[in-house]
Length: 310
Image 1 (cartoon, rainbow, N blue to C red):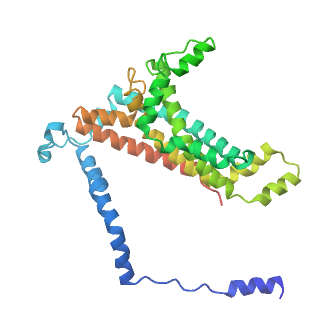
Image 2: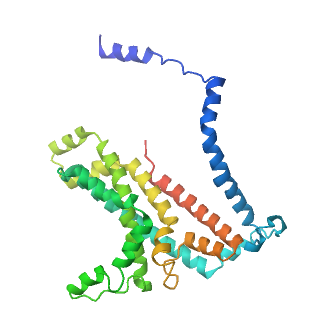
Image 3: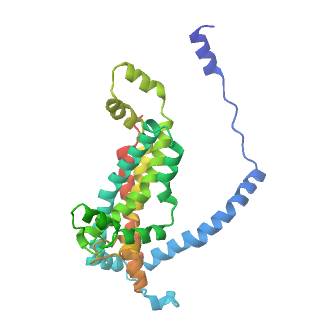
């Protein structure tokens, strides 16, 4: 049989018809989905709708017992939130987290993945577990360790003092608090990037690298012209996940600095939380939806930039 005949024969073969679902199977599917849908509706969908409704009102903490008595103020609540200097500062702080934290987290995660995939053969399982441990470690325990390590008399400044360097007040100085908090975020999230990039690297075909090596392409050239383009879908996934995390970052600044000193580490999520605690329910809900809109816009831009070109 010639190649053309075989190709034509393969094209003539029709795939089997798709199996249609029956009412009984549909009922079974909905039955298994019902618990999740119930929990999602009660604890996510309904609160999200209530928050959207409250964001157009002047509701305060004292009005929660009588939510139907509040006045509708339209976009005034959003104007109040956007016009707040504290909220504007939190937007800038969140932008700093994203601009600094996302590239560093992705670069470190990719470097670790490449090292585990190519350079480290012995104890590979141990290194994978050790590098991923910060992701699954309790964030409160991690924050306590970081607070101790970066106190003026902590281990970090002790090492710097031994080297003849006077260490700063890492968490008490507005100039150093943000880098310290970002460093904790990078340390916690680089392991997730590493695992995703490692999965992407292990799925790449090896014959392409062998052909490039035979053509004389060096390691850096193969990485730049083969690995990075073929990792484009994985890079998109990692970039979106890490960006959403840093735009929603709350644990690190809340546990380490409470948004201080002087609001230098206060993020949008932390501002929303604090406004809710102060009883300013309307501005808090408005700020949360502003954050949601920012995340949607940034994610859309990232999908447009990193989408695979077929």
